[in-house]
Length: 142
Ligand SMILES: [Zn+2]
Image 1 (cartoon, rainbow, N blue to C red):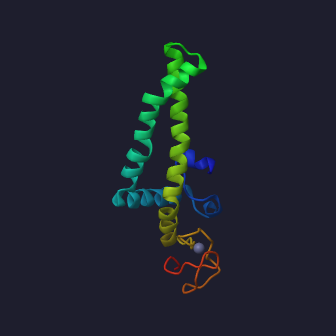
Image 2: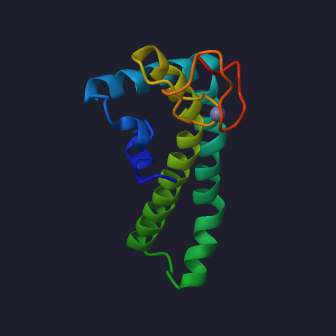
Image 3: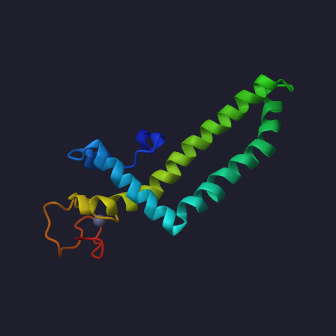
């Protein structure tokens, strides 16, 4: 996991150089659009994160607070929910970090950053027809 994922920044650090802020924003917006059109954002957002978070708050939080000795005080409950939300935040950063990897790489290519969509290897020094020297992907090269 990369800490930048926590703030929704998914352009890999090794590719950030040479891309200004507006270009990075445009790349991430294009990736979001691609994920939105495929339905992946909705699916992962709801079924991957929101539902588990609500189930966790509903069924796991009260017994956890009881075990920790918080007996029905509302501030303890609020802290418990904040901790669950923090965990969901980190989990969502990891889920969306991996989800955004390939769409971000794909969106970088028209902007002059030649990377393998599969593995993120920098293809600047390689001709268009070559396989990715790192993972062997061909369809993604170009
Ligand atoms: Zn590759």
